[in-house]
Amino acid sequence: MLEIDRAYVAIALLWAVVGMLLGLYMGIAEDQKLLTVHVAMMLSGFLFDIHSMPPWLQAITLAIPARYMNVSLQTVFLAGDLWSVLIPNMLFMLAVGALFFGLTWRRLHKRLD
Image (cartoon, rainbow, N blue to C red):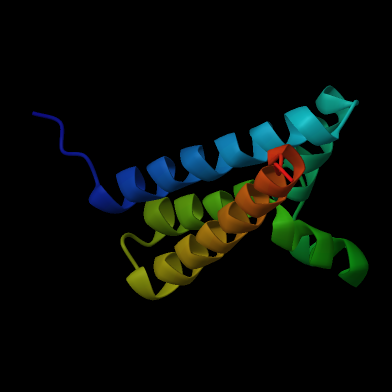
């Protein structure tokens, strides 16, 4: 029987939800969706190390959910379930998800006056 790591499943589910919120927001806010996805992938730390980026670009990566997924997966695969690293990353993913949910809600919400 295959044993599934609970930390990996929790991180993957959270990232999927936050990624969907980001995708929903990009769908209503951006015209260049493919370019936005490519930029998000480059800023996630998957292709380029975040610490080698200029400080102003590092600040922008804080709004990319894949950044936290990347760090969390590296932690799970290389060091195991270090909850002292995983929980802050999961909380940041939740915060980014809440931000994109709020932006999407604000953009789509119609008020009846």
